[in-house]
Length: 456
Image 1 (tube, rainbow, N blue to C red):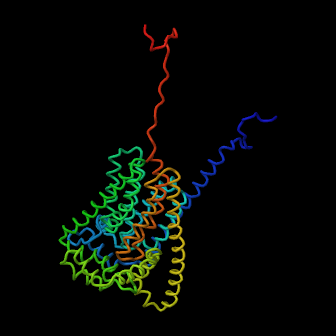
Image 2 (cartoon, rainbow, N blue to C red):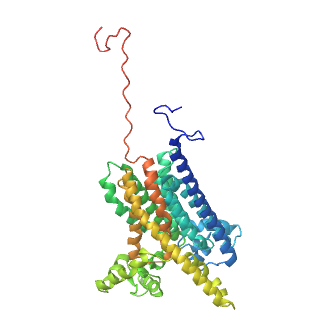
Image 3 (cartoon, one colour):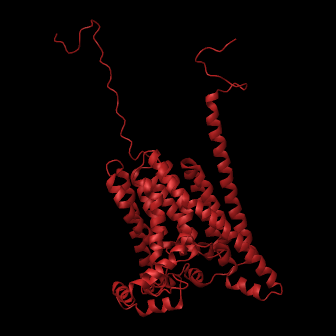
């Protein structure tokens, strides 16, 4: 018997052919979710395993974080991060266990944000974010606050770009500002980044202000939060009586990145940069900058920017280096009778990490213009440029300030999340969708058929 004309064909299982795209979509979503969860589990397991095996001890800036955790009089930087680090410290945890508590918790929150927003917005971005998170596994046992700061910034961006529909607007705005401000207090680098980002996004937001009025609101949230976070960091420093450390510690990134940078080994921290920042601490910052820039010809500064550019576009990996080069681990290796074999294996691991990191970061960068094009195609205009602006803001900040591989953690970890938010969440939130117009109700005629507008 032939099927009727217009009837939906069915397969032998009784399911309609129209259900197949939906089944394929669900299968793909399940595959992506499995990959993300496996990568997150591997990050946690590998990070804890390496940390417990090698036992890194805090040093340099990270040693300061540990000493200032729970001790306001020793605060210099770290914002709310040093207080979160103080919680396990107060319970008697070692620096290693405290670092694992903060970093593993940050990774779990980031993983939830990736699953919640990337898989709903643009699934390939979930894989890229999870893969980059996996590359950070050796970083988990170090007393660093980079991952914590990125988690706060990620949560704030999610709340600003794709607020929960059940939340009141004021609540979501306040939560977004709070998360972003806490992230900036932990790493003031994000204040510089946000200021550059707002400057780059101001023109698109103004051009499409009528089509996407929420774009200006998002930029306002970013700006207010960055100022609040910067003020929080400075307030904590003022309470500790070490407000001058803003010039002799944080400002060293400006001196090392540009003002006293060399043409060889450019853009990195140096003893000369720290000494120059300390020597200029009694001068107004703008005066010190002007004097040092005018002391050398323009060709010198152009040469430094040219030297820094390749390292900004393709920064090196850092997680394994900072783990193995912890002073106590390096000393243990150097005094080992088997140090030649250990160093050879370490170098091979570094080479593998460098190749994987290079491919992964290249894919993340290439995905950003694709995200802009896809968001544009789906109707976004101003905020479609956000993924590209995120990258450009990072690059422009580090053309001037110090460069290290770990300073670019937020760029590559959060760029896929931002792309997914713009492609998916921004569209779901309806930045340009007009309010629905209700159809007029039909007129009801009297039983006699007399028009309602006729006189009695």
